[in-house]
Length: 448
Image (cartoon, rainbow, N blue to C red; front, top):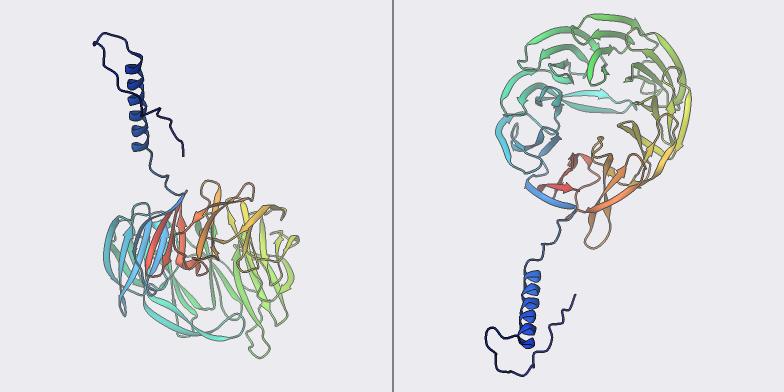
C-alpha cells in the first residue's frame, strides 16, 4: 500500500493577508488541499478487479436424465418430461439467452448430430435388438425406430419418418431400418428439409452398414452381410457401384471367431478375428480391389489420421502407410488418437490421461503435452482445451490450453465447482465456451 505524506497538521494559525498579498503558508495550504483531493480521487476511482480468465457466465437446470448437444449453432438441452416426451431448449452459447423452446416426442438419451443440414435429429419409437458384439458376448442394442427432424435455428418440426440416421449431408439424411436381430433390411436417402424419399435400396439383412466420406460429405454406402457379400452404393442416387464376396470368417462363439468391417480413409477394412490375432485386409472402397493384408491383435481399432492410418491395441499406438499397411512408427503406452487440424493428439493410457501433440507423418512427439481430457476435437486460437481434476480442498477442475504448435500446456484457471470430467459426454466446448453439467445445473464457462 502506497503511503502519501500529507505534511504537518499542527501548523500555527496566522492572520490571513489581503487577497492580493503573497503568503508562503497560503500556497502550502493550497498544495496540501490539492494532494488530499488527488488522493481521494485516486482511491475512489480505482478500477474494479479484473475478470478471471475462467469464469462462469450462465447456467440452466439440467438433471441426470437430461442430455445436451453443444454445436456452433447453439447449445441444446433435452429435458425429460415424460416416458416418451422431452422439452427442447436452444440457448445462445455466449449469453444463455433462450432462442426457442418446444415439446417433442422421442427419446434423447442420445441424439444424431445434423449440423451439416442445420437440423436436430431426434430418435423416437425406441426399439431393441438382440445381437452379438465383436468380442462374442451377447447383448442388446437400442435404436430409434423413427427419426424426427427439427430445424435448429427455430425449433420448428420439419418431418418424422421411420428409420435411424446413418449419415447426414447438407441436403440429405441417410436412414436405415433393422429387423428384430439388429440386421439392416432397408437403407434409404431422404431430403433434409422435407423428409421426402430420394432413393431406397434393400439391405438384404446386412450385418454392417458403413459410410465413406470425402472431406465432410458422404459419397459411398457399404453394406456387408454375414457371409461377406459386400455391396457398394453411390450415396447420391443409391446406384450399385460394385458387389463382391469378400473373404469372411463366420461368427462362432465357441471358437471365438468373427469378422468386422470398418472404413478408414478410402479403404474398406475387413478384420477376421480369432481369440489371439486378427487378419486385416484392406480394399479400395469403390472397386473393392484388394490392396494389402497384415496380422495384428484381435479387435484392433484402425482410424484415419491425416497422412497415415492409426492402429491402436492394448500396448501402443502405430502409424500405418495407407497403401501398403506397412508400420511407419510406434508410440508405446498410447491408445486413442484424434486429428485436430494437421496435428495428431495421442492419449497416453493413464488415469488421468496425458495428451501429446504428435506429427502424424513421423510419429514424432511435439513438446511435453499435458494431463487432461480434450473437450472437443477442434482447435481454438491454435490450442486444444483440456479439463482435469485437481485434488485439493475444495476439489476443483483445472482448465488448460494445449498449444498445437509447441505441445506446451498453459494453465488458464480453475472452475468454480468441479464437473464430471471423466463422463466426457457431460462436458463439451465450442470456441471459448466450456459447457458442463455440474450437479443439477448446466454451467457455461468463458475461457480466456
